Image (cartoon, rainbow, N blue to C red; front, side):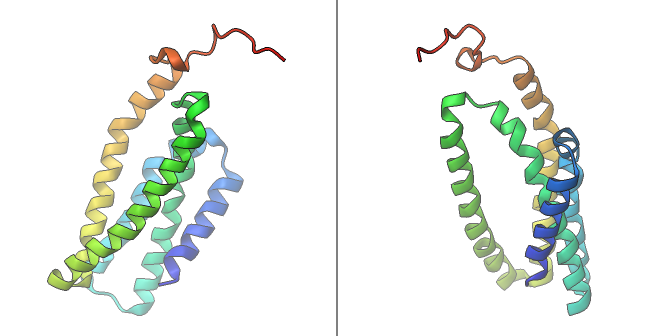
Length: 159
């Protein structure tokens, strides 16, 4: 079970250290795919060694989150950024707790391999959603539609 977090650590280190922010943003969808596609292999009920490798490779893809941080930050008003990142962190931790519970329930009925393959389908749907979402988010970032985000006419603050 430690292979997935090791892959996540290595992926975050490699992507965060060696790729520029724009490259990270372009690689979001391929990294989401990398997080999910190896899980298809669990449908074949592999042994411990192959399962460990699949989880390690899948963990590398979780670096996709690094490519989403800057567009998320750019889409927020300056005074709400801290609160939004706190909410994002809380939501992520909640899903990381609820997700395994739900998949555990599915695994008890369908079997572990089927539940992991189902999780891969969920990741694939997420990648598809990101493909449809990212262009709209980038367009909003380039030309803010929210007047609260347009800081160009803000008077300078008093010292």
